[in-house]
Image 1: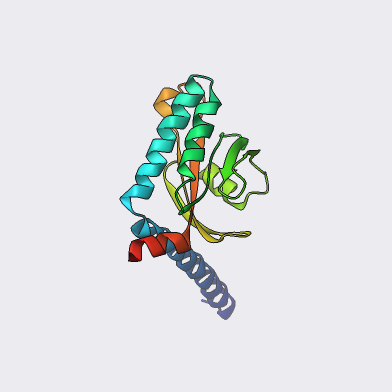
Image 2: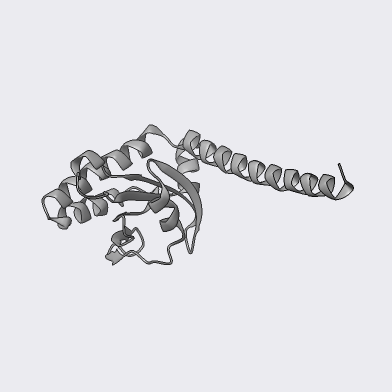
Length: 166
């Protein structure tokens, strides 16, 4: 084997190793986030999913909006909402409590739309600090002719840790 081939194969090995380490780190990070979630947060997402599902099937988004407003009474929830599979949707934040359209620049949106199930990530909020962002798709069996959208909730990481330490 020539020295050139050894260098090429060595370089490729290092690149693949770096990619594998990056993927592993990402999986470990998501696993740590999942461990940190309490059953309450998982059930929050499941209840929101059921309410949004019924809201859309009955063509009455006000039901979902009111439910999210009630959820925001919790000191750990910073934001909750819904996004369709095409990237449109709405959300309500704890700071302004008004329904706002989902922004295309939302950094978490791309990860949500590419996921096929429950997803947990950490993102930096503009004012709230680190947020634990969870999302999951609506039940696809209820939407046979379309890809359903996703519900999402953002928790204050600091408030979650304070609650867990109490």
